[in-house]
Length: 279
Image 1: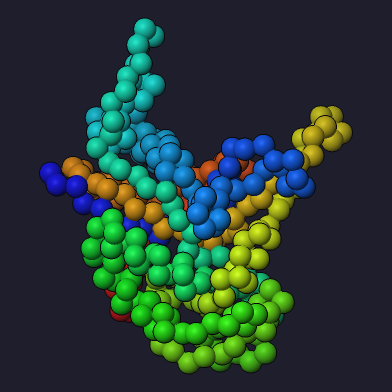
Image 2 (image 1 turned 90 degrees about the horizontal axis):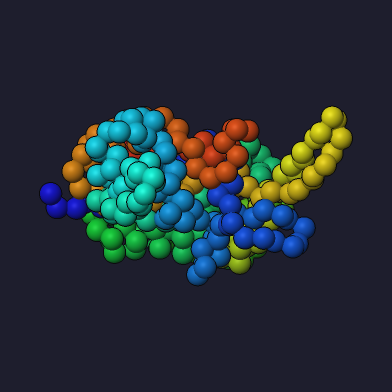
């Protein structure tokens, strides 16, 4: 069967900590993963594959041959004397950042993004051959791509006046963004690249503590992607694609660290069907 690349929006249902795995000697002990090029949050391809493999081992069963076909042979497939190194037939790409929820003076939050993020999103769908998703996303985001955004003045598309987003006064512009909202969510805000960089550098930090007999023995600080953040990922699929997607879209999947405290619950959505609702 010929491989087909499909793309998905990942919506963080709870806070998410895709850890960098690196020691940090600053104020924040555990930071989120950042793309080496654009310095935006990401979930590395190995992390995506590992999280999905664990999920499918429960959904399909560890011994189901589809698990080995999709993800390759793992340590559980080897005996005590040998290790198995068989590649899976699916290719998992890193999840890239798309939307960050930001505080608002008028509404609970707006969904912040930038023109460069949206353009890279559309370009990557085309480059990796996600044909249906590329057409849907390009159509859905066409009205946003023509908007001019000035530094210090994020653009919103709601009639509210005097809106302030993260201490920046917003500018109201008129545009039909209904198709974009079907893809990205309601209350979209376009930020200038420099302003968005500041937002990412100021991601929420949560204090974590370890108690023994009511006494603090280890206090540390952990950076998170807040709930309602959105990323997107591409997966090159072959056989069992329909069965794979049916399970993928059914329920939240845990990505990143701290599952025991509810972090990392994420819902996958098919891009083409989401964009097509109003495109």
